[in-house]
Image (tube, rainbow, N blue to C red):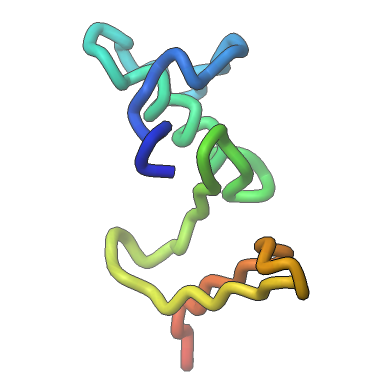
Length: 85
């Protein structure tokens, strides 16, 4: 993800820009693509280089669990938002 994050050229499609963000700086098209994903009904999704998700709790750090297959390829990811209430 770090090699792709913030690179506008990684977004090879027209962004919806649902939040009407002015794309006037390098890297903002990538951020808008992420914003579009979290604004969707699914509140997240896959973007080039990784995935984005809406926690509903604001910015923070969360436990992420990754599942690998026998070939050491990622086959699943779970983000624990820690909602105990």
